[in-house]
Image (cartoon, rainbow, N blue to C red):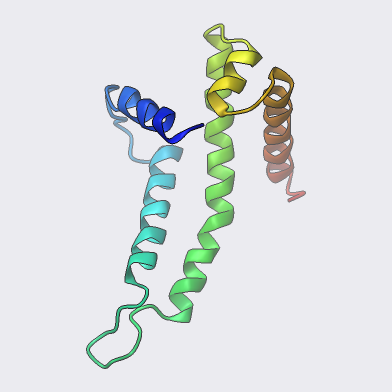
Length: 125
């Protein structure tokens, strides 16, 4: 999806009412991404003792968030694709919005996401 399309999507979705439940998957993704952003913003800074503000344990903590972020993003994308299908969108339309070249690519992506999430649920991953 091109940058202009992404901004149009942000603008459109920002008109929707905010989620009331702060325990939603989307809220957890937002929190974790914000924490990673804080870490990256702090890199290069030094504390009062001339030492880096970001320590190896801080970086390790951030790295530890990514697997969970991937899983939650996969879950969100899957839910949005299910909603798109429920609303009557065909795979060609879904592919277009995902920046994919074909309906087959969109369908295969959805199947990969579903397989990955099922493997996680079963403890295979």
